[in-house]
Image (cartoon, rainbow, N blue to C red; front, side):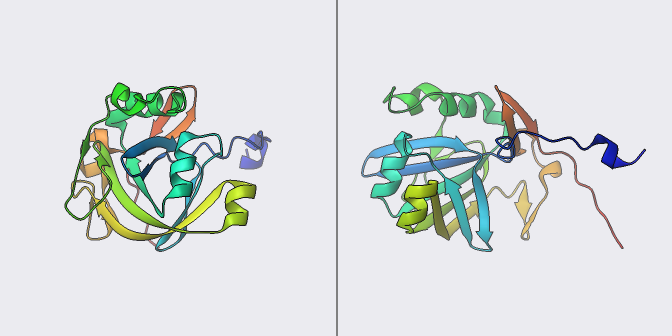
Length: 187
């Protein structure tokens, strides 16, 4: 049977269900963090992320020149789900209530969330039309780090690291998929 027999239309709102990233924003001492599936590489050293105008993070992003993107792992599923379900508009203690832990690095102004496999500081490339019309923010990566247990020599090797660092894809309603096993293909 051909694959064509299994291809069925899906709702146009479903393609966002992909790799989840944390978007961290801050202005002064005001910090917010939220999971966002609407993130994407734009180039080798540029990223995009969509943040709706109603999100608390949005006002911090608009007031700042930088955001932090992080790749959360399976070990912090409950924290991710909580941070995506509760708005700081409604609960100013959202981050503390989530239980997410952070650490700092000397050359980074953002606290880095624990349980992630990679982190990148992004300097925003301001495009007011895209930001207002499409909620789309673009930026240049200016600093980046990765957990050496799952990334070294410029390559991911998640299958060799702890399961809790495997990245995930959000489906809906608290349902995630962890990245699977490595498959090598040669010609």
